[in-house]
Image: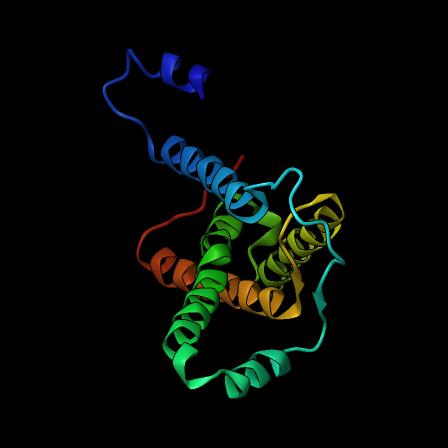
Length: 167
């Protein structure tokens, strides 16, 4: 990044490729920070939790919520659902933009699903070391949905302006 800034001091503007490349790198850094940190050192080291039944536990939790907690839990679920969709939505835009071999819907969806699965596996393993994160199939589904939405946004914008950037 410092190299990027030094190189562009003499230039009056940044080209589209450089700006998008910098945004992609920043996005990857933010995904790492949001999904893996804060790492709680010396915190509760419990049994790692894993939800492998899609949607069922969330629906069950909704019905079991006491009335007084309802508004808190609704906000929590909305935040959780939207957060998981938005997490990989930009990846669904960046993948076809930067990687020629991954410009199909199928390739983008598979890549987003694998990235999401990797995040969940790392979160699961990190629970053995005191992290509070859990592994949840619903997160993988929602993250992948976000990647799909991102791909659709990419296709709509790419029809109007060529967004393809080759490395």
